[in-house]
Image (cartoon, rainbow, N blue to C red):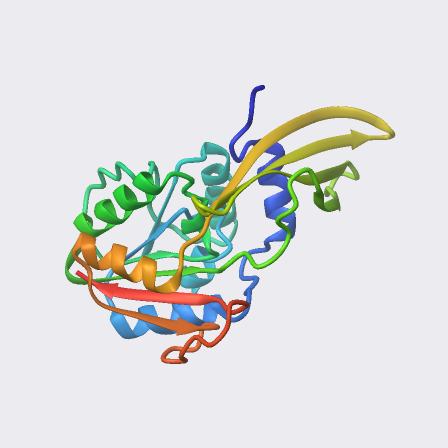
Length: 254
């Protein structure tokens, strides 16, 4: 079976459902405030198609972006150009950043850190981000805990979006694997594009999420070398986490 990773249809749906500047639970406001306080140049890792980086640039912050998906980066660049903005975008994997400069801040919004499927690759990503921070630089990322929908074989959700030219894209999210011991689950996302009742394009994406306990991730970050690891809930700096349905924002310094 052949899978697409953030291919053309996935990117198109992503653009239509995650608009530039669309804040989820106050995340954009949080990152804007924290980066203004920290100062210096920032890298948004796993930048996607620009939902977060563009409002950060509009707020006057210096932010570069990186992603491994060429389709996502192309969409992000198009949106940046449309806004009359400019920055550096890099096609990289987090496990091998190889960037031309170090940063005062590195951020991963949207829970995207959980999309790194293999535990050893997550640690490699943390190590690479540590190496690409200036001394005293700060890593900020947010995660969530999956608390429901663990029945393998079940269709978790369906989605229908209308494209600007009138085409229709449908998406089906089917859970195919759950591993509580290793703390991950895998879905197949099936995208279909329809034009005047005829199917014209399909795409199948393997979508994995690996989750971490709050204390677990703190210990991993500290073992990499990060210091002063703090966790705030629901994009309110200093708010103590109290239940599993919250968003959790980690901040740590090199």
